[in-house]
Image (cartoon, rainbow, N blue to C red; front, side):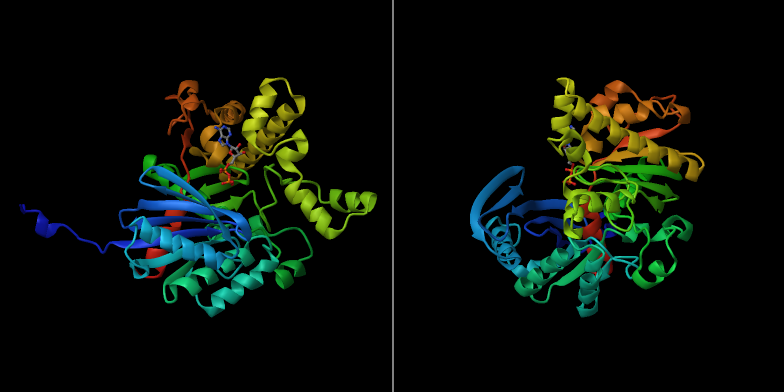
Length: 404
Ligand code: ADP
C-alpha cells in the first residue's frame, strides 16, 4: 500500500557496473548494482594463457571454482559474461551499463578517471614506458571487453590520479631538471583508489580529521599524507617500487647500490629489475617468504631473519609516518588498510607503540579484534582500521564519468 512519502522518494536508475583489474595472467572483477553499491557477484581468473587456468566466482556468499583452458583475456571475458548470465546476475550482455578498469599509470595526462576512446588507449600504451608491468596488460583488459561487449562504455581509473594534488616541491626529484621535462621523471604515487576510499571513510567517522596519514600495507605497500581530503605526498614515486619495504620490492634504497651490484656481478638491466622488484623486500631479507603470515609464524618460532624482515618493514613505516606528521605539522587520524594493515595486529601494535610522541595510544583489545576504531579514549590521534574497497571507487567513477 502507498504511503504519503512514496511520491517524495527518489527512484534512481538502477544500473549494473563491472569493476575490473587485469594482470598479465589474471583478471579480477566485481559486478555492482548502482547506486546501492551492492556486490552482485565477484571473482577472478588466474593463469590466463594456460590450459589449467582457473575461474573463481563468489555469488551470494558461495564460492565456486573451475578449471578450463583459457588462452587469452578475450576468452576469459567471454567466460565471465557467460557465467554472469548462468548465475542470473544479468539476463543479457546489454544489462552491463559500464565497465571500469583499474589502470596503473595516468602520467601527467590524467588527473581524473576518463571515458575510454582511441586517444586514451594510445596514451595508456605510451605510459607503459613508465609502468611496463601493468599498463600494457591493463590495456589488454580494455580491449578484451571491447571485443566481447562491443559498444559498452568503458572508463579508465588511474592509480596515480588521486595523487595529482601533490605539490611540485614534493614530487620533483633532485635530478637535472630536463629529466622531468623530457621524460616526466617525478613522483606520481600509486594505490590512489585505496587511499581515496579509506580517507573518505575516515572523514565520515571523524569529520575533523583534516590532517591524515593512510597506510596501505599489502604485498605492495604505500603511505599517503592527506590534507583536507587531498593527497599531498606518497611514499611511492616514479614507480611503485619506492618507499616502504614490500613483499618482494626493495622500497627506498641508496640508488648507488644499483650500479655497484651491477658491476660486481655483471648483471643486465633486466636482471637488476628482477632483483629489485621480485627478489627483494620481505622475501629478500627473510630468505624464504614474501608473506607476512609466514614471517610472523617463523619469528614466533625463533627465526631471526623473519624477525628482522618484520622489524625493517615496521621501521620504514614508522619513518614515513614521522616524516608525514612533520610535513602536515600534526596528525588527526592514522588509517591502516589492505591485507597487512587490516589483519596484522602485530604490525599495528609495533607501529603505534613507536608513535607515542604524537600522543597516540591504541586499545590492545580493540586492535586484536581488528576493530574499526582502535585508539584509546585519551589518544590525541584517532587510529582506524578500514578495509579497502578500490572496486567501489571504480564503480562510482564509471557512473560519474560515463554519465550513467
Ligand atoms: P595484494 O592485494 O596487494 O596482493 P593484500 O592487500 O591482499 O595484497 O595483502 C597481502 C599481505 O597481507 C600478505 O603479506 C599477507 O601475508 C598479509 N596478510 C593477510 N592476512 C593476514 C593476517 N591475518 N595476518 C598478517 N598478515 C596477513
